[in-house]
Length: 379
Image (cartoon, rainbow, N blue to C red):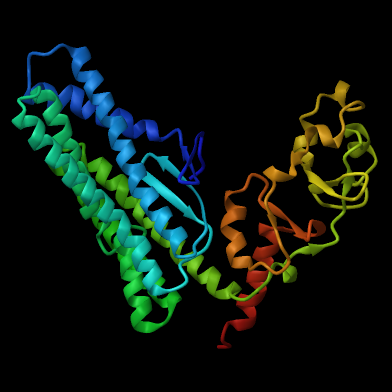
């Protein structure tokens, strides 16, 4: 899930919001301001209900962020790189650069999320009791109590043994420890995730059709998300199995065609390099041969016709810090998730800062097809 708004870094970890997180804010605000708060504590003005509901929604987002930060911090302590955290419509996601090296590390990374939510729920519950003892406004006590309940529900739900939930990670850690086979463990956790997802979809639609309970649509949506994500995890595991031990150097296109950063857009489109090559993306190099960035046909086509004679590749390229890079000795399995999240779906291969190749998802797909055919047993 890509971020729409960056919140900077917390504990050195990049944090961002996806636009769909507004759905959570809106849902919580409506449930509290139009339902729970005026029902339990009537007699207040509408703006009081809505202000408190929006504040509660923001605190709930903070608790979701704490859940994901716990995953990220423990992951780093167990040798797993973290690319960042994104909050979105169905919660949050900590993007891990690599997988856990051992079943024990997997267990620790997975378990800390539900534990954090459970602790948050306990703290909110204690705060609600304390505020009630102080005879603070019942509206405030109700909001804090709701935060306690929702965090405990979040902890319990995430602990269910089904991928991609944290409980699915715990199940995978257990199966991995018992069998010694990470791929087999992932298949088991993914199957459990699909089973739970279908159960939620069926029961959610049943609640809507037979009981008229529209909240069943939310359950069905979460169930469908579990099915799709669990299936994707299983496929990703199969991919990792096929590509295990394959370095980038075996997949990349070596010595790619480059364009100088001083070349104008007009010359690029009219003379080189499309009259000789079928590529759609080219590394941009400096006069001394250094790598400056990456340019694509799509980027150059956005330059107005009247400006192409004065606009250079250096003016429109993606600067190197914004381009995915890798090294020849890096493993392809670790590069795939980064390419899937990247804007250009390709990476420049650098060896000591020197450009030696370029690799795309299409390159990797061809290798996967080849390796799969080579290892498939004959009938």
